[in-house]
Image 1: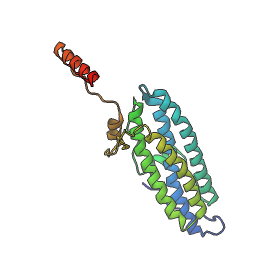
Image 2 (image 1 turned 90 degrees about the vertical axis):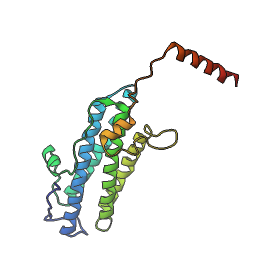
Image 3 (image 1 turned 120 degrees about the horizontal axis):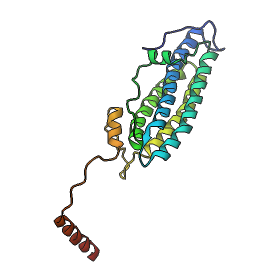
Image 4 (image 1 turned 180 degrees about the horizontal axis):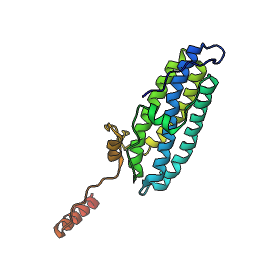
Length: 212
């Protein structure tokens, strides 16, 4: 459910109240998206496991703080435009158009696979919002562009953990957070049982490699 449309009684100089209302509606969804992202980043921060735990755990805290600052800036812009920023959990859940983050306690890299999809959705919607703002209010557009610089930087930090030696993302074919987590996470295959014969063959092969 999208946020209720609201035309303010007043807005910033140079915009009509109708135009101010358009920007308020646009920023209201960006505010929900950023608040949701901050919660998601903290959820992942608390639920990563595995050998990459500390690296990912500590990488996410600065991102969380930056995203909270973005949400604050968006809310203050809504107020400056004559609107009412709605920052409660109830408003977020009622008005958002996406589901909760779907991965619980999991390997750190698996979480980054899912987080990459989260960032992709937020960045795509931020870009659409910036494009809509461009013809109405360049100040709102500039705010969203400023957000995008950091959001796209943070996604690069995430994707650096997901890139393989060929330069492709391991999650490229994933269509959901859980699929992305499975594609990025460590292999769960059980190693084949070694026999005496297998060991002897392996030794022969190793000797042959050394001879080359």
